Image (cartoon, rainbow, N blue to C red):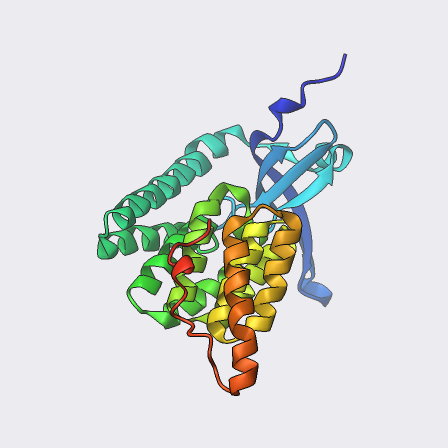
Length: 270
């Protein structure tokens, strides 16, 4: 009888791994053993996912998959560590992000910033915390801070997971509206590396390219979006708008697009 795969992924908690290192040289040489701690999820009957804990005991950084045999041979369960250190820290992180989101939704930017910064102090690589802080700083016009956040987000594949799709879209739209076009292009391009068949990502990239002054590139992205979803109505309207004015631009020898004058683009695509 086949096993129920719906139980996966399954959180197993924190496990430790002993590591040895040679230190010193000559007569001072010695071997030292240390423990590293890992947050573990079981992905299938034969595959485990491990992620290191940071100094605040929360999972942070690169996730890796290892087979069952290697896991069982090298990792030891640490249920007490998980219950007394990691679980409370993860709950605190989650609560701060939730409070930040609540403040942001109500327009309380200073309060939202405080909560997201507290979350980042627990885990500076946390994607939802960085997305939230980035949105706040973008709204406040603190572009240097936005740039630092983007460096973190663009280096982390977790940014583009479905779980935080609404936060991801909100930040991408904010980048475009603040005219940070190069960052926005890099942002959507990275997202498409993770999901090249997402027509909405192609459409949003088309919007950025359009506002950056690249109608030909925008039309290419729209063609891809419509190839994925021929019934994508707003993409058809955008394409018709661009096609109508690209010829005028070439004929006049100047920018005839009116980049802020496309009424069908007042809304944002999620």
